[in-house]
Length: 319
Image (cartoon, rainbow, N blue to C red; front, side, top):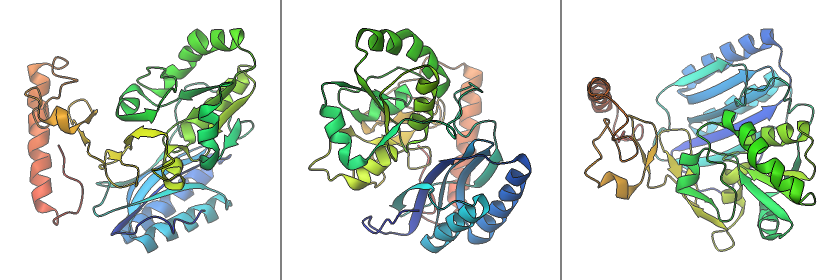
């Protein structure tokens, strides 16, 4: 694990982590049980996914509790080099803790892809600017359209996907012809924390691509290691928890979540007449039926009631 001494410390520590390694099914059950018990006792919230290909998770709790959880996880997995990114928050970033067994820790839907055997070359966060500016490189954002919309590296290709499962089809339709015409191009990919772009490099290698690279630790590591003055990042970084987005200081950003469609909402979108808390936003105003809206309204009522019962500032408010 890596030190996070440079990050401002506040009430809660958030750790995002992953590692591609082989895990036996019987070990997954044991790991789930031990992590769930420890998280319950230490009031840690978040999600940890376990599969035969590795582990992927984000958790939030006190500094000591999160540090100990990661130590336990590394002991159970018999590793010491887990990719971990840290941030800090005044409020709990999750409502509950879940440890789940999955077919994949990040779903691309292709059984033959195995990042434990082959992945692309890592590019350090401090070297990423040089790669971005290299005229002999092509940079690809492997995240979803709604994530890219609120922040990206200028000039990166946007595959316009709504899920990672769609990435292989984009590669076959768009990237293969590009590289066929420009075979010397170096390919560089990035994502939030490194896991999707790392698995994407494994897929490209399987498909016969050469010169495949990815940003080590993803955007989060870049924002941690590269100063705003030197940064080529534009916007905020979407995260899959109650904070919704992070700014360049890895502090909670300005976006909120639409609980109807699950997409991030900008401060400008919150002011639009199409926005109704919990029921709709600009992106989904024509997407749902009256029956759907009624269900959303009841869900929002329950969320509001739950928020009233929680201690002040215990989790991020729902939008």
